[in-house]
Length: 234
Length: 355
Image 1 (cartoon, chains in turn blue, brown):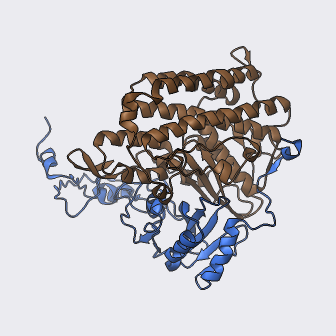
Image 2 (image 1 turned 90 degrees about the vertical axis):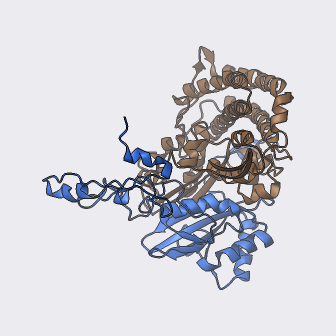
Image 3 (image 1 turned 45 degrees about the vertical axis):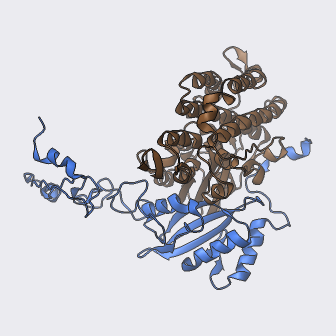
């Protein structure tokens, strides 16, 4: 090893004249799908912005024709200034190595829908579920789109920029609850439930009234657990 | 895990997670850049040094910071020791799951403790190291550990103790009849599936895909170091075991090359002169940095506003989490008892799965 290579390395690698596999694929992608992809215009951002409905088509081209067969990362980003939710995809090529090919699909915040990549890249399964869990992006065509890190019955999408932690960050009282309607278990229609209703005594502090007066419903997930509700435990 | 069974045969398996969820990413967006560094230790708490490196590389990419030479060698030293440390732990637990209770695990732990002692002397903590900084590392090597000079301690470890421990493990385990019966041909993952399920690390390489980020997209000084990418071709539990053993041997090879450089650069600066604490992003933008963690590809996706003091978006691409995607397909068709071994062979850490 010569001493010449031991210069301090800069954090961002210097791009040489030759095109990396990712740059080459990006250029060809623009030729192949001129209608649905557009350049990333924000300063400091890389990759291409893809029209959300065409993301599966573009991803299939990437995998089958350009050899970018490894979907490393799928994640959501809340771009609240532009009123958009974004899904960011990082693709790599196993055989050719090199840097990432970045695609972004944008959708509006009110009704965020993006087609799922699971049929093409099964590895997107948990990551799309996570993006759904945290941002509420609905990935159509996902075989099993449920919450993954928070629990079933969680209310809200915690990584959105306008989300407020129930109880601690609320603007006003009474506080909201992360257990809407007091459900401890995720309530599903097909499960027979036993309801135990009790209205707790109303306090005299005006701010607290609404919080305590709500009806608590305990839901037992299986009929076999009914006796727990009906009989007092000795 | 929710397992659907036919007798003892697994028809379907779905991992259920989230019990250790701490909303790492949102806390990361609230923190300043440097405040996340100790927090990355808590992702994969068995290999905190590698997590630190991944995060430091990402922020250096975002800020365009340079790293002095000695810091790079120190980083590689720490990261490769972490890899050995992590694999010793992983193999100990894999063998535990396969029924070789306690003995091999404790044999491996003796060596792991030696490495952790070094981490404690160098970083102040055995596991939550918080060692890397943007543009360098936090501390230089200590002068001595347990009244032995540090270089002597490392030489003992790298040239003598660790190779001996690996040979001993080989002798004890690799040809053991029960281990082979429990692991050969179990938990098969085809190379096509390994890529499709985005698996990374030893899981990918045991399926015959020689993909290692240290070679595919080299960072730090890895392109100047001489080592092979450990790869095996059968894609079962046994091969994942062997890949990890091979990788530890390759890590030792790297460490042998790093030591002379550490001796040569003694006294050189270990961190750039930029202040670490009130760091603000010089430009708006995004960066995705990834490193070859012991468990696979660890990626950080960080975006920031111009002059922003904290990340706008801080995402962790956790290898354990994504490797779990392949657990269901790998277990299908095998017996319930095999599922434990297959899970052990993925080598997950829940701090990283749930974040």
